[in-house]
Image (cartoon, rainbow, N blue to C red; front, side, top):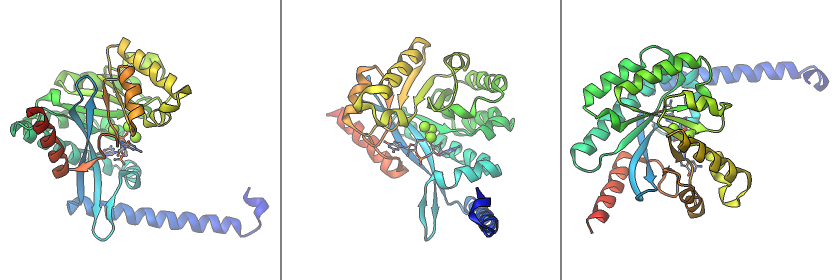
Length: 283
Ligand code: C2E
Ligand code: MG
Ligand code: MG
Ligand code: MG
């Protein structure tokens, strides 16, 4: 297309590209420094078990608290972290923090909460993941059944055999495995059968238009039925309305996560949520 736009267009594109590269390099070094300075934080978003309307689990989600700039969401730095390999360091921090925290909640008698941590394909392939998980469980004393690892569907589709082998090792440790953002990748039903996982998380794009009925409702219904027939539990992400929750309950979805229950919140706020739930149970 550039040809038709006149002589200066190419120059414009390269300038633009260079600006992007400089920005990228800056962001990378700032992120590196931010990690060193302890600017990363873990937020928690509850998952509600639909069988008994209780919070039985929470997803750990990273945030970058930058002085002056405030709270930066993962969408602004996870991509870069993946490209530069910084994601392994970030992932290890989130894993260790979340496991320490879940163990602490257990120790305080607050909840026997499963905590789920997102794992990047980088960590899956660097050969250290199984050792790291074992080490962090040892260090923190968290029972393995209370740790869940979420892996995005479309990151699992290369080298399927080696991924499956690592999954088997992780399950031997006793941790739970989930396929995240399910339905957005291109995996077929036969893949789902081959991955030794415990949970499927339906991507929020399907949940968004659920109340309208139609296609997304049909897909959601099909995913739930299929997962259940394979003995897997189903979590729906991005649940924002009562109608969506009612639909999912009627379809026997196991757990829901979304703004309807709570946004991801910082640790103190999450602890208050747990305390409120504990108090309500005592009444
Ligand atoms: P994810 O693992 O699929 O996490 C769910 C995302 O959906 C979170 O975004 C959460 O805030 C958002 N969400 C939850 N409920 C709702 C809702 O009702 N409506 C809407 N519109 N959104 C909702 P967040 O925290 O911005 O994280 C985005 C993604 O960044 C995550 O998607 C995950 O892929 C990645 N990520 C976050 N933390 C980590 C981490 O520690 N390691 C790795 N590797 N990736 C991470
Ligand atoms: Mg996730
Ligand atoms: Mg997801
Ligand atoms: Mg996602």
